[in-house]
Image 1 (cartoon, rainbow, N blue to C red):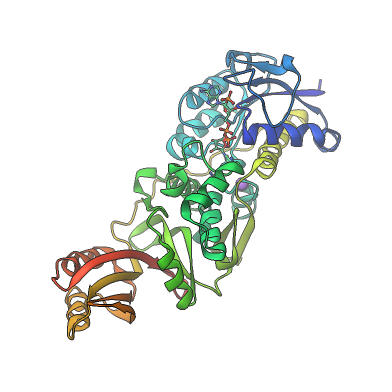
Image 2 (cartoon, rainbow, N blue to C red):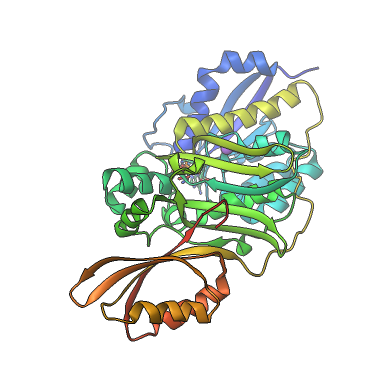
Length: 431
Ligand SMILES: NC(=O)C1=CN([C@@H]2O[C@H](COP(=O)(O)OP(=O)(O)OC[C@H]3O[C@@H](n4cnc5c(N)ncnc54)[C@H](OP(=O)(O)O)[C@@H]3O)[C@@H](O)[C@H]2O)C=CC1
Ligand SMILES: N[C@@H](CC=O)C(=O)O
Ligand code: NA
C-alpha cells in the first residue's frame, strides 16, 4: 500500500530549521499535489525547548531527545540542521543505520565525512539530500548531479559564501567597516555560529570540496583545498582594485590541470566585466566551464532562512516522491574516483607594498622578481608620503613556489618597509 503520510523529524530549529518548516507547512497543499503524499513534520529536536524562535510551532512537536527522531520507527526522513561535526555526524549515521532517509545543510560534515555518509546511505538504499549545503538557495547540487552528469566539467569558479560577499559588497559600495558589515551579516542569519568559518574561508573551502567532488566525480580531501579568507583585505586594496577596473571577491576555483586536481579559495581581484563581478550582497554564483555545454552560470541567494529552507524542503520532497511512488532511491554518490591533487599551483598576483621613496628602488625590486622567474605585467607608484612610497605590482601567471621565494627575498630588502597585501588576480579566465 502506498504511503499517504511521510513523516519528517527536524534536528535543529534555528535559521534554516525554521525556514524549512515554513516552506513545508505554508506550501503543504502544493507539496502534497506534487509528491502524492502528505509531508508531515512529526518532531523537532532542539537544545532548549523554552527558547523564543522565529517561527512558532505546537509545543507537542518539540523534543530535547534526539532518539525521538533518529530511533523513532515512525520517522521516514531525518533532517539535520544543527551544524558542526558532533553530535550531528553520530545522529546522521544512526538515522541511516535505522533505515531513515537523511537531509542535511551541513557543508562541514559533507566536506569532511561525506564519503562515509554517502556510502552508508547508498548501501542502505536510502536517500541523502544535501542541496542546502552549497550556495543556500541555488539548486546547484541538483544541477551538477542531474543535469551536468553527462557532460565533462572543466572548471568551476564560484562565489560560494554569502557572508563574505555581503561584507565585501558593503565595504566596496557603502564604505562600511569590516566589523559593521560582519555584524549585519550575523543579524540577518547569514553567518555560521562561529563566523571565523566564513571570514577565514573554511566554509567556502567545504563548499568547493563538495562541488569539486561532484563535478569531477572524485573524492576530494578537504586538507588538499588551498584556503585563505578575507580578514586581511583592506579598504586600500578595494580602492586600488577599483582604479585598476577590478573588484575583490572571495572566489573558489576548482579545475583539473595537467598536474592533477586544483581546488582553492582566496580573495581575488576580478575584472569588473567578469560575470561574477556583479554578484553582490548575500548572493552567490557558480560559473562552470564544461565540454559540451560551454559556459554556465548559476546565481541566487547563498544564505538566509527562506532561501536555504527551500533547498532543504526540496530535498525532502524529492525523497518523499520516491517513497510515495515506491521507487528505488537514486544513487547518492558519484564521487567514485580518487584523483590526485596538483602539487603546484599557478596564479597572477597583485602585491601592494611600502618602500623607500629613493631612486633605484623600483629597479631593485623588479630585479628580484626577475631573478626568481616572476614576470611583471605592470607596476604603479600609487602615492608618496615623505620618504616612503606605496607601490602596486601585478605579476604574470607564475608558479606559486617561485612567487613565494621572490616575495621572501623582497621582504628582506632594506628599501622595503612592508609588504601590505598580496591578492590573486583573475585575468583572461585564469588566475
Ligand atoms: N544560515 C544559513 O543561511 C545557512 C546555514 N547552513 C547550514 O545549516 C546548518 C544550520 O545553520 P543555522 O540554521 O544557520 O544555525 P542556527 O544556529 O540558527 O541553528 C542551529 C539549531 O540547531 C540546534 N542545535 C545546535 N547544536 C545542537 C545540539 N548539539 N543539540 C541539539 N540542538 C542543537 C540549535 O538549538 P537551540 O536553538 O536550542 O540552541 C538551533 O536550533 C549549519 O550546518 C549551517 O552551516 C547552510 C546554508 C545556509
Ligand atoms: N554562512 C554561510 C551560510 C550558507 O551556507 C554563508 O554565509 O554562505
Ligand atoms: Na544549493
